[in-house]
Length: 148
Image 1 (spheres, one colour):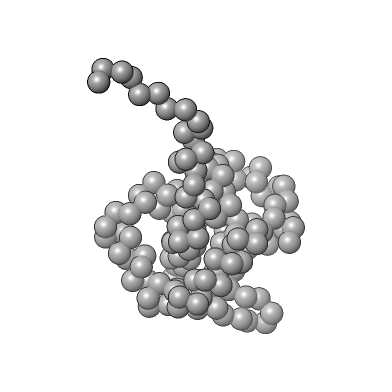
Image 2 (image 1 turned 135 degrees about the horizontal axis):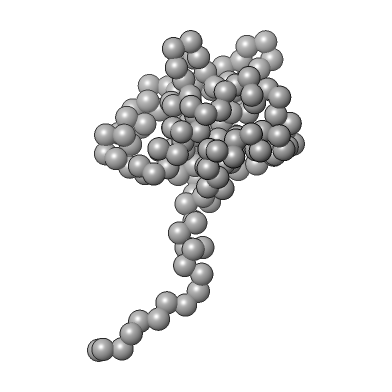
């Protein structure tokens, strides 16, 4: 009984599994929308959601924002799937104005985010998303080069 337990394998890979989970990604998308909406902004374009979700998944710090904005990046197919799932679960409202698609939270989406905040679920990810939402402006992202 005094034998030591040896853990073999890549422990980091086990912890990184949340990035592949659709439910966690949907929660992260809802948080991005909630934290990006302020007084005069009523909806958030896909570009901002994709950019913030990508940098949070890659665990990049906010002080590298200018470097990230200067290089092109791509929107994944998983994001599109998660947006559709969020809409099907009635968490998102899709808005279209002069050819630009943007997203806002429905009342059930707001309830999900409120429950996450009240129960202190994923506090580190929430804080990181909040920092990125404050750091990234829509005018900066308009100059960003996307690869679809």
